[in-house]
Amino acid sequence: MPRQERADQATPHVDAILEQYGRCKGNLVRVWEELTARGIAIPYSTLTAACRRRGIGVENKQPAGEYDFAPGKDYEPTDAMRGGVTAVRVTAAIPGTFRAWRQSDCT
Image (tube, rainbow, N blue to C red; front, side, top):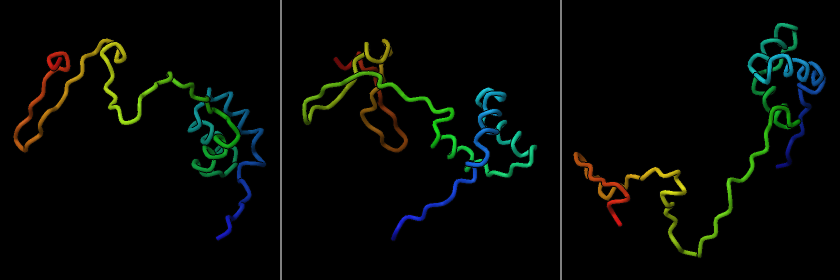
């Protein structure tokens, strides 16, 4: 089935959206409320989708790092990778019971 192209309801109001985005400090709920008060009737979901498509308020996420694992090797982060926090490993979960111990106790 061919994809239908729809006209974007926000296109005629991009200047007003950008103006309100600056005034409302990036709060899209407030932008939507201000646009509605001006008589610009755009559904909130349409506003947020239009902003995402235009890159308004969208921050590119930077990768946290690179990890190199051999194929089939299980990954278990070290305490240093978790910021020194020791994990709790659950070994059995039987209804009515719970058995766990600290990762440092397992070594």
